[in-house]
Length: 219
Image (tube, rainbow, N blue to C red; front, side, top):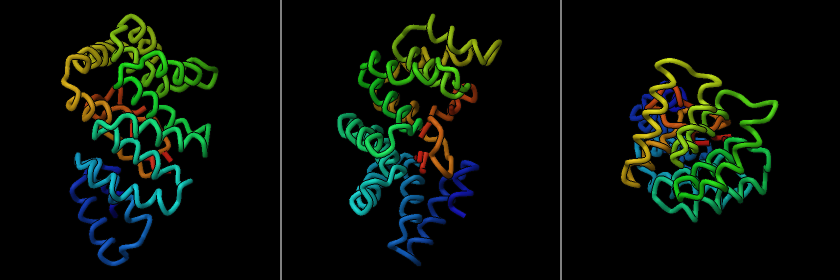
């Protein structure tokens, strides 16, 4: 039930559902992971991080928990810890696209745009690129302030009002204080299995591609 509530954006109901599940089976990795994702969704990353650290300690190769922990750490502003967590996940599964996207966004939030773009370009500009991967790349260009490149990439998939809304959104993000920027740029998409990149749900157009995946494997 908790997963279903997350999928439709009913985050508080999801939280209560996972709390009930934990009351019955407090050691359940699935319930603990779901509860952590719900905590991220309601902007309680400190609670999520505690749950996820415990899960990772028990299963260091749990890509989903690692990816979600990185998101929580980014939301808390601890980008160095988030980067280490994402890289640990990629050491286990180098091809985990959602983890790569989350790492790239984390780097962009530290103004390390060159490194972020190096992670995203091979996927977003390759033969198997998807709309989602391209819009993640456009987001990083937008955060960098390269609106020409952001528009060029966005225009592959978007046009008219959608395109204009995305570009305005990117520009607005750049002017935000760091805590607000993190909260918006890192807002997780409530995918029951974090397998997709994450963009904020504040904009339909840039909507994940973000995110946060739980098999992201996610948040």
